[in-house]
Image (cartoon, rainbow, N blue to C red; front, side):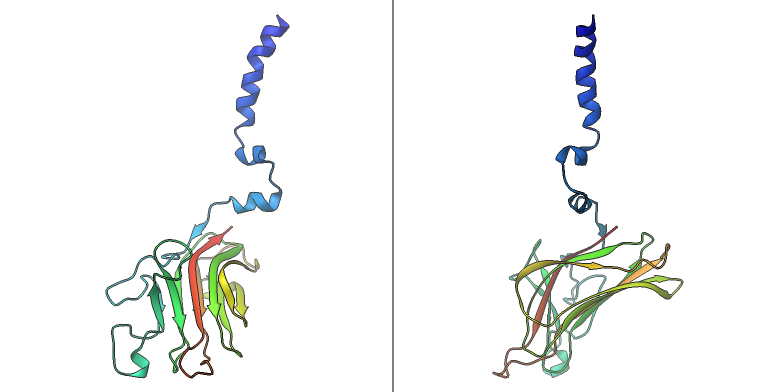
Length: 202
């Protein structure tokens, strides 16, 4: 009788233990955190661009469709060659006059703990590229995070930008990405930053 009971209970215990797939992976806590669902950034993978060749949901400086003046050239543009994920990335290049930037602000009620992004850049020193995050509550900045690089990054690299946690509640988030502002010694090339696949994580 005991043998029959064990035969019946054994499979049931196996099923119950499968309810937590992360526990079965035997991952350390830091690896379990990587399996958390991302909090999307609107068009954070830069796959969607409008007829003006600007990334949808983002504000960028420059006028991609304009031609003939230094302030009309590309400074933030769609790139299909240097890409981490999907078809496109955002390329922020110095056009000899303006430092490129892309900015987005959107409603967000979940307080993230970090922003994850993939970046690569070619910088002519001295120069700096950066990503600045601000979290808001009632139009006031309550938390923030910041990343910068002063050296070239050869291949797409994952960066994780920790955010402060002074406030329990937020209502919106802003991300500001800035390219470089240095011209190469040949006076032709300039500092360039590529960004792709941005997501917040709790």
